[in-house]
Length: 179
Image (cartoon, rainbow, N blue to C red):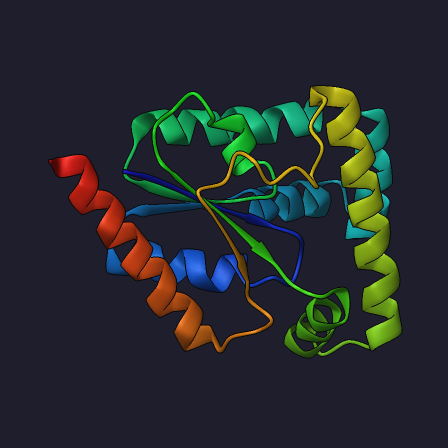
């Protein structure tokens, strides 16, 4: 089984993806973790590293290569902005989380115990960089939701409700694909 969870920062991807991996006994891979680790190795913060990656596309290619390799092995939940795009040729269920920018920024600021404006500047700068990079590298429009099996606004629901909805979706998907 392959499950991809995509969405911008602060939409709840990681929280839900980790829960799904645990509940369905699947591996879990997060593109954001790989990105953060690479930034740490270069001794850069996320904003600096995003700027670096704009000039060094091999970083994105490496992250995306790891995503595809994990998808091909199967039995994995992939958490990443491009996860569904990179695995389009591999059968699975693709979920996109969306949420109001203000909600997303607040979630990140609370989680990281940082100031709202600092988080907003960093997050929007990073997202602007990603939108431009992915359009240039892969001709992907991140506002195109057509490849997703479900698009869910996580800002409208409790975390528990989102989990129930997604688990129900996956169970229904499994039932229909076992027939």
